[in-house]
Length: 71
Image (cartoon, rainbow, N blue to C red; front, side, top):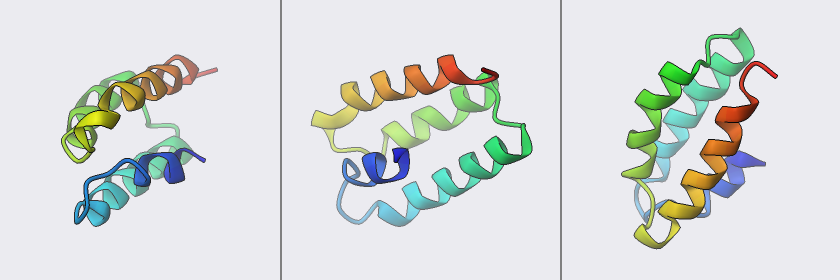
């Protein structure tokens, strides 16, 4: 679900970069190594790929995901 959400908000031509970041993130989630520290590293990279009008909405979704880590 987050995958579709993110790709719908990415800048044209940046889809492959977002896909690679999400693939790594989901892999880390599966392995249990998706931590708040990692999220702090990957989030700015993801935000840079988004259309400007989508950044605040994405940040809210990311904050919700971050609050769920370890739950």
